[in-house]
Amino acid sequence: MTPQFFYADPAWTFETWSEEGKERSPEEHYDCMSLEDIMALPVRQIVPDDAACGLWVIDTMIDKGIEVLKAWGFDYKTVLFYYVKVGRALRPHMGMGYWTRANPEICLFGTRGKPQRKGKGVERLILDLDPNERTILAPRGEHSAKPLDAYNRIERLLDGPYLELFARHARHGWHQWGNEVGKTGGVPNLFHLPGHPARAANDNSLFAGAM
Image (cartoon, rainbow, N blue to C red):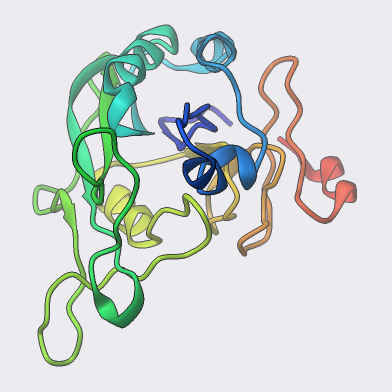
């Protein structure tokens, strides 16, 4: 299997300046990686001549995200998605931030060669509508969890095969790499990066089915 679309929400290390901020940082919820280690993953080795990548970044590391795309063999093109999170009582979630409090998360888009777009109507802003047509209804999942609708939009935009890196949700029909695959749902379909085996969250026997 040669992936044509790569999708990643890296385990960024996020520097905080207070104990309150530390409690909400990624390090309190899962293992994180340094920028150097993320860039050093052997993704470039398996990227075909024509491929694309969606990379979620935190606001303070947009420039580093572009560096990661380059290290993995992609050229930054545009923003793939903005994801607006919703908290209690359907109010916009208030995140951390150095200057202004963050909400939307950003997914960068990079390409290698000339991948073919198959859908022209895919929207960038991830918003849902409730029965009363109130906007901004993308409920929050686990810490750092991204909206499942992103998978639907990617599948409308580009053909697979699809590979998700740092995957915790196992999307049907996709392959996954990470050390917590299936933690938030789905049946893992593991893919090993060269020298970096994948692991299912709760069932090591799934190694036997890895691609």
